[in-house]
Image (cartoon, rainbow, N blue to C red):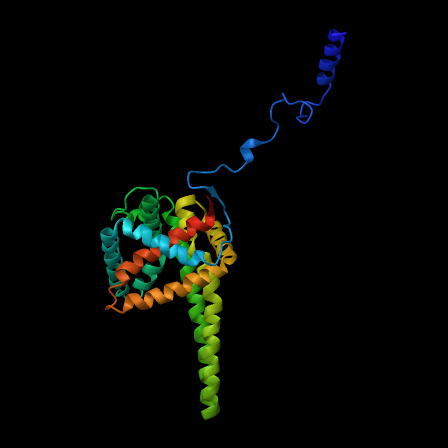
Amino acid sequence: MLAACQGRHYATQDTLPENSMATNPYAAPQARVADAPVPTPDGQFVPDGQALAAGSGWAWFVDGWRLFRAQPGLWIGISVALLAFYVLVSLIPWIGQLATTLLTPVIAGGLLLGCKALDEGGTLTFGHLFEGFRLPQAGRLVMVGVVSLAAAVVMLVSIFLVVGAGFGVSMLGGTPGMGGLGLTTALAILIALAVSIPVYMALWFAPALVTLHDFGTADALKASFTACLKNMLPFLVYGIAALLLSVVALVPFGLGLLVLVPVFIASVYAAYRDIFFIR
């Protein structure tokens, strides 16, 4: 009788579908485990970022200060070199502004690698200031600069057209027309804000995504915009904190910028880590 029951038991198992796990606990897993997100040592990467609480905006500066304190002397040296570079290049007519706009994402890529090294227990080196130029993604970082330059041109042309039209109307209208010029100038400022805010949202994390995750330029811009859009409140707090810290940094003859600049750079890295990783 026992043998017959066992025979029926195995016969029943043999007739089960091969992919049935609910009735056959000994079957091999059928789920596509390879498709599941694999956490990295940094945490699970979220390509479009995650929404955070408003207080995160201040926490990014706190974390940036932590990275600055790891090697303050070298950070200040990098700040001096960076400020000197921008001053000298900006003195070159026409080419200067063009060069700084195109090269800023490349420089940012190298400094973000330095922040990553510090965050992982490594060291920041002066070479990180030029590391972006040696990256295989350097061309894509320059393209991020091209997008920034194109947006700046569009913004300036829009302002010029609006203010120019308002000035022409005011000249024809005499004294009453001067009030119209003020309204036109206000409109030009609103247009500049309308253009610049979405552009800065797209550019903000693009160097980090290109450098640290090998994103294409378009994908990096899209992901950065989406991540910023999800975190409008934290960025509002971040912007207010940046404004207040800038005022404090400018008080002692602007020497505070030697500290604020590296803290600001490190805070961008901190924001990227906080938004794009689940830890």
